[in-house]
Length: 110
Image 1 (cartoon, helix red, strand yellow):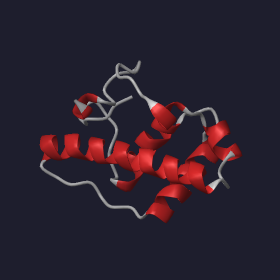
Image 2 (image 1 turned 90 degrees about the vertical axis):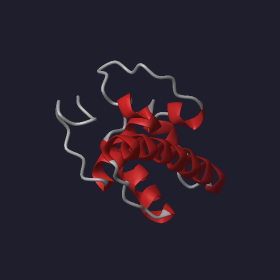
Image 3 (image 1 turned 180 degrees about the vertical axis):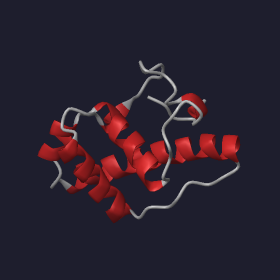
Image 4 (image 1 turned 45 degrees about the vertical axis):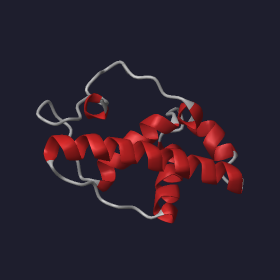
């Protein structure tokens, strides 16, 4: 199911929980340790699910990222894309850490 996650111009999947939060909210609460923990946990789950789908399709495993590196990537991505939500930020992080090429022959395309 996650294999097709990014193949649609208009999202055809439902996101729950903190993944619906926009970057403005995230940046406002970035110093709150509980919010940081919830955000990192949600993104780790998202990345794990996408990695599972990609590994089934491509027989490869995604790259690892530490919690601290992940948090820095989330905040950095939100600063660069303040109108994005956490789901979009998570997609961008997956693409960045795995050097995924975006195109029609990829599992990811715009």
